[in-house]
Image (cartoon, rainbow, N blue to C red; front, side, top):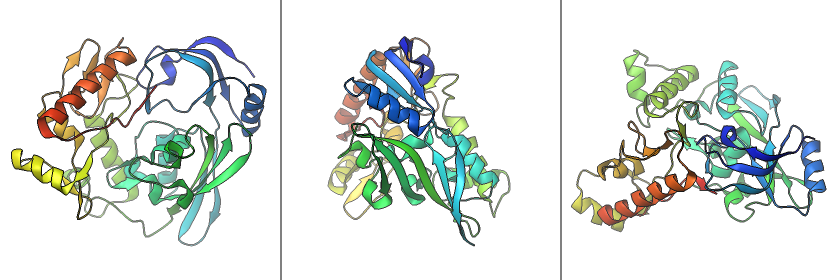
Length: 337
């Protein structure tokens, strides 16, 4: 296995931050992963997937292990459903498109989300009314300290809004190696009620959409709002949409009657972070090479040579202003390293 020293991670994180890894190795199988973890048991290690949900603010003084396990297959099916297993290193969007091509439904609303399959359960990624937990069955993961494999069921993952056991109780203890999803083969549950999907379909005079047409609509919407990380460094949505108590929401809405919101429960309300940031005047703002995207205020971008620290500084300025203006705290969705 090839281990490289003082390795640039610029191409391995979607923000395009030129941080260096003390050492770097890519693993292509479970056996290689076991080998490198065993051989370097006493060294500090940093596990890297698709690099899409992180902001590097410093060099990584550790052995960076890039999870590059590939492969996808049907492991079980009946008349109505198919169980598909994907290795952790598969690109998420390509995996979604592969399922759509095979007429397997359930992932189409999450088209074009950056990153790899293995990191999707960690964050319980979601978009346009769908989340990983909706189709997730289980994932296999290796314990870093013992190299033992464990299967985590959906219940064991303790999914919440952008949350899972992998961000809480077992954080930094396991490496996900593969994920199993249960998808529909027919009678697909078409979900067009969130965001601009319905508008996009109407534009093309589509009244009874297929999963492919829903995916195309999502892709068109995302491309109109979100920059391509290959062209402009970013990590998608930088902030979580805050879920606040109805009491706090009512207080904020009294001062800002036009405030957008979604009811979560009788006691909680979700407020779009992008709306808050835009109302606070940050949309399109730039601080050197760190900026807020002109089309989507939720997205922070690297215009070329921004450091991670400069992007963090801008994010803190946004958080402080939102709290002062609306009384609502917003949290980063991106992992700051």
